[in-house]
Image (cartoon, rainbow, N blue to C red; front, side, top):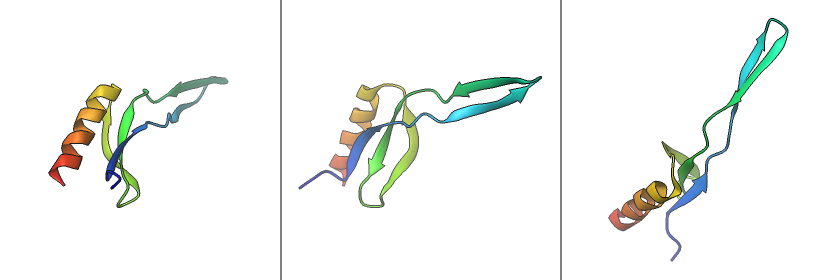
Length: 64
């Protein structure tokens, strides 16, 4: 059986605007999220390293 929770790379979101005619652009920090295949959405927590996300994902799959 396929596990319910999976690690996914976090999608970078562009944040910024225009100041004094210059465009200021930054993006959200990179990271990893955990995807719940049952509800078809990412969990709200984000992890900076893939190892941390995989550890939490394994913990969630074992608890199920």
